[in-house]
Length: 281
Image (cartoon, rainbow, N blue to C red; front, side):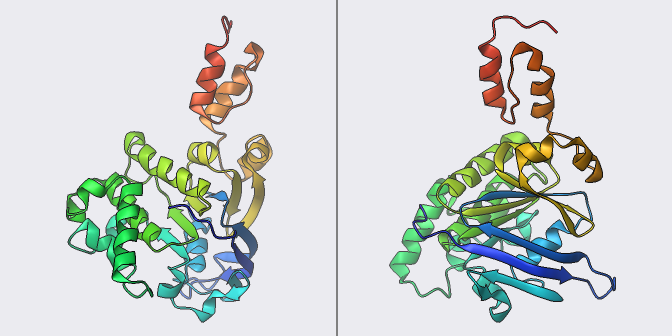
């Protein structure tokens, strides 16, 4: 289900937010923009404001200062349901967004109020389930699915709606790598099909493997916005943000004396190692 639409722009302009119970800003005057063909990771320690930032983008929270815009349109003029047609959200716990009796019904529900014929809705649902590897499970109750299958079902529901952006909140929560990898392979493919991906995570290895751009938040401020290569080679910034460098980068740097180039990808690093006949520690 490739997205052939022109790239869209999601922009936060001088956005701040504070919870009334705290009385102080959780997000401080953030300006940030994301194109619908980018894969961006938002990194930062617990309490940095990552999830608050995502909820501002999807309209669950509204800025106490500043504006969230999509292609120049102020999203405060739209309901959460309307925004969900453009910006999808994958919760840490998929049980918080799966409510129907069957996987098929779950995918159809998001399109309920869209101006589509019944035939078009069914075609979109079939294609979305197939893209997520869930066609054989469409009659299954979501509660019978594994955590990984539930997350992919949540993605299928978003995919059927034709959203331009997908925000993932801590996708590693509750998953082993064997369950996470099919989800991340799917997310990576969606990005290649011109879906904007915004991944909120504390996992530097996941960000290094998949994202092309990284934004670092600390105490509600942006400390860094740029390439992962630039970030992960800046030791002082990593210390300031309480982040460790990615495991594969650290390993590849230790093997530099063998002619190994810095790497963020395990398969690419293995290829380099196999190409070396001998390497002494």
